[in-house]
Image 1 (cartoon, rainbow, N blue to C red):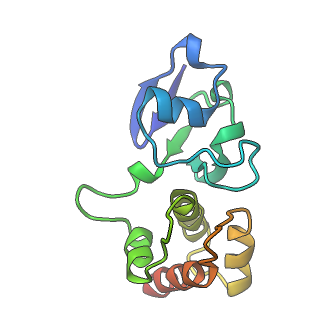
Image 2: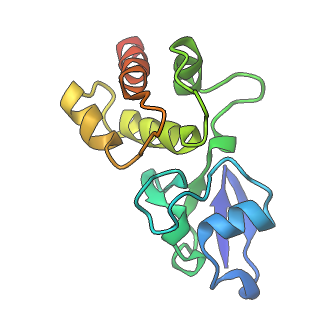
Length: 151
């Protein structure tokens, strides 16, 4: 089977199809941005997008992704140029420990691609599945609002 991973078609050997997407990303492709958090899809540290929607890669079997477009935090920047959400994250000094940040950013990117000018309530709803033990929620919302205002 094949998937499109960060814009590049890649083959998934049969021996990997029973693995979770997170395991395949980290262990087979070396993409370690998505993190293993709770392992049951509740904390959002493992969030990536599949065909533009957020998924919890720790509970997503690769076998369900034939032909899907998977995007990870590693696929956001364009060469040396960061994605606007990544730039806003740095401008707002969002990261503290950083563990949840890749998942947070992927959820924010998916939100802004689907809803370019989200309301505060839409931001809260879209981001509520991504937990941050450092409590940077106000800065996360500010970063998303900055990107939305630029579009």
